Amino acid sequence: MALEEIAVLHTEKVKKYYDGLKAVDDVTLEAKPKQITLLIGPNGSGKTTFINVVSGYCKPDSGKVYFNGDDITGWSMHKVYEKGLVRTFQIPRLFQGLTVLENLLVARRKNPGESLIEVFVKNRWVKSEEKAVEKALNVMKVLDLEEFWDSQITALPAGHLKLVEIGRALMSDAKMIILDEPIGGVNPALADKIFTYIQKLKKIYGLTFLIIEHRLDIALKYADYIYVMHQGRIISQGKMEKVVEDPLVKEVYIGG
Image 1 (cartoon, rainbow, N blue to C red):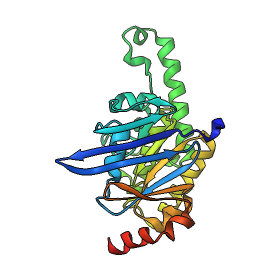
Image 2 (cartoon, helix red, strand yellow):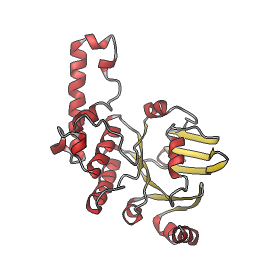
Image 3 (tube, one colour):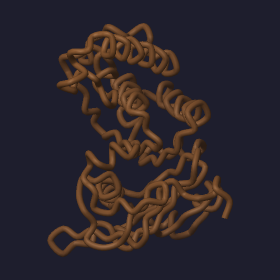
């Protein structure tokens, strides 16, 4: 298999139970390099539990999770994050007392100020801080957040908060980003724009995305590949044309 075809994220028969309930049941999924993989399904279908398992927020009861060919099954969320697999949340988890710029800067890896040795070598950490600010400014430019650089997070609307979360993932040098409802609660005009930003980041940074989203009228047209979950299982997968015409998918959504 050619290198570019190898999945960045690959799961094999992942299962997760809660009090005997199969929240995730035998889920096998792949996210290919530099693609937008969309995971959809009615509320309660197991999507968020699945990404919680993948990102280290909980451990699977069985099955395997591979990232860039490495077995990361059961790893802690911190270790998964350090590996380069970063996720956002349906409700953005940002530092409320900080500005947009400051929220981006805290996501940087290997800050020399955190080292007891390097913190006293001024030239080293000052140069590092300068590079970090330059990187943050570039990230804000790509996401059209420049004018908000010194704005308090609490002053930003929902759509811009989602962009700041994506910006923090970029600051952490993520290799893949999992987005949990990136356009939830966002007005339609900005919702479309957020997905165009995601496409832009895919090209500029070579990023791979796995996205959970309920607003299918917007999200489907941006996806390279789609998985549909229902009652913990994958019931359909493929390109948009195949998935939207799948009788089982239609039945689930009409019934749901």
